[in-house]
Image 1 (cartoon, rainbow, N blue to C red):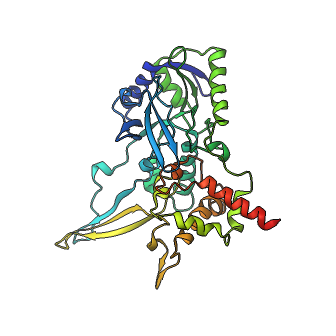
Image 2 (image 1 turned 30 degrees about the vertical axis):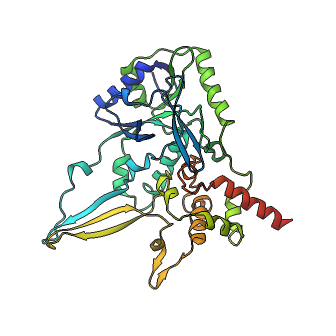
Image 3 (image 1 turned 45 degrees about the vertical axis):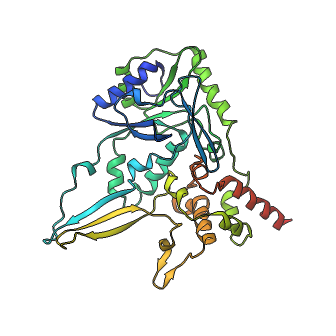
Length: 374
């Protein structure tokens, strides 16, 4: 096997994949069912994968449901993203005593090699964005580069998009194109199997340890067709306009006030987004004053203090904060990082308690722009 080759494994082969990666020293992270959701967590074995579970999604709505088959990857994005393992929600960056000498990091905070199992096209695009944002430039985030270094990626082509997915509109899915070591396309018809595309020499070496067989032409054609069909079954889509120009030119449109009347400014959308990366730092001391720590945690542009400067916050209204988030994600992100900051995963729609739909809001802005120009 070598990059570019294709093979087939069965369900037991997927279990062996987890075992082989763990034996090679990887911490294997993948989907599993916990607390009524499909979450991403460390896997001790392939038996912990969500066999036979699907999800129903809509704006502000997420429910697990039992499937009639034993599909492993027939669910769309859950509340967590791979970002949490590369860019942790909270981490200690410094600890000092009275001598002001930095203390060593706790063992549990030392990065270990990770293998991500079941990464969809949208999330693979999100990881690539984080590599540019946090791992690139003149001053890369060393914590991020350590966590992402040596990452082994097992991607999963999406064949059943959810009700809030719109990756096809953003050009990030449902199929994967690069950035993976192995890519799986699941088939649950006559025989539960996975068509495996080899992306790297490391992926080929892992696959050789698992055991596989060459696919037939019909197996490959069926896998490609299932991904192609999924592209036409997206639950949502972006309006076919210049999105970047739309958010730039719509700053004073009345619709922002309508969104603000519904938005709770809770920041859920930024927490579940796989590309939002903003952080803040907090300094704390113990009661004796002999020990101090600096912690980094995720921050949200929906927080009132996020834009605080001497004298107060710049963006004091919910309208201005929602507009800032949307304008940056879909507009000025291009200026900073050369792409959109949205990958079409739909998490911000799914986990918004007010059910605000990003694609619907853009469509409304496009309607206002069309009316203003007529």
